[in-house]
Image (tube, rainbow, N blue to C red; front, side):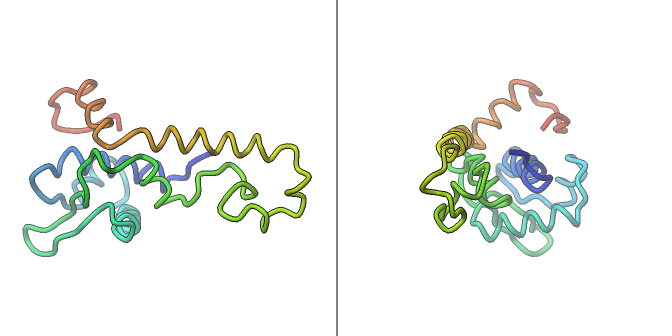
Length: 149
């Protein structure tokens, strides 16, 4: 499985937001600058994350974006699935496997794909934004900019 820029940049943006929006709202242009992501592309990602209930926005001069939930309640899996969709390696072990494959009942490899998908989901669901904030603080200390997200 290979993640697209949606998943990679979306996760970077969410970690940035988690670190910098602790007591305030953050403008997208600041995240875009720190993470070297196009502001236009970031707007598209944040719109999806907002619809998923992971980010909230405030309009006006003091507006911007912040997390909709505490960092300990948002997992990497939540973020990736909202941006990428299912994280299963093949469609035949996704939401409705029998409609995806006419050989479902006879397939020897379906268990391999299911086990891979289960492990991927297990890993991404076990890591929260709070975990990533702690990792960031260990690596970067109190530096102003996040170069290695």
